View 1: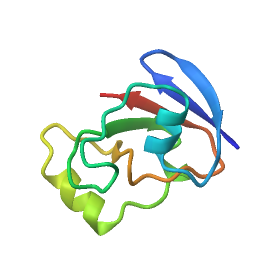
View 2: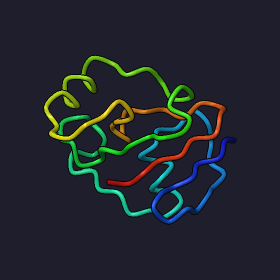
View 3: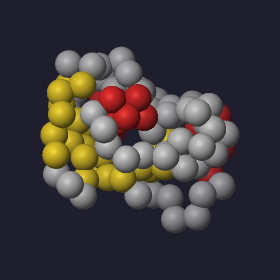
View 4: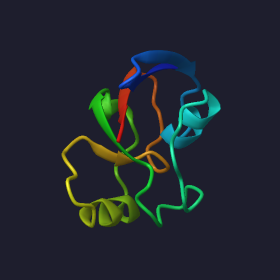
Length: 95
């Protein structure tokens, strides 16, 4: 288990390590959109990860290519469907 904090609400949840941010956010009832069903074909699950980015899985080519096409991304940007939680606590900002 790891701790997932969601901004802007500030709510924290215990979620299973090894699951995607998208599945973890959905499992705790947070409102996050995924138009493509978690296949990295859209950018609707784009989130910022201000804390704990190193605990997430590394960005793979398909995610990097999709992020490159999004206006306004930053170094903390991830697609929730592609980022897998590790053991360290993570803070995610819903955009």
